[in-house]
Length: 87
Image 1 (cartoon, rainbow, N blue to C red):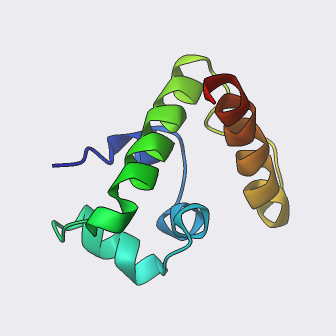
Image 2: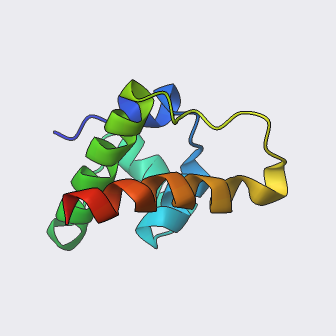
């Protein structure tokens, strides 16, 4: 079972995580309530959660002092910086 606790700890909403995963907010809501993540998405979801956890540990998340309209870009910027170091 996938641990979604980094979302809350990282201050990432279901809608924001849905956009990162390219799924609906309803899909993320289902995952958080026990519906399984489709095997085609498990790798991406797990990797994003691992990166979010690392960003929390490094105090890059949660994003603070950013307007709601700019949150997606700010979150993506943080996560992309980790993707570049793990690829």
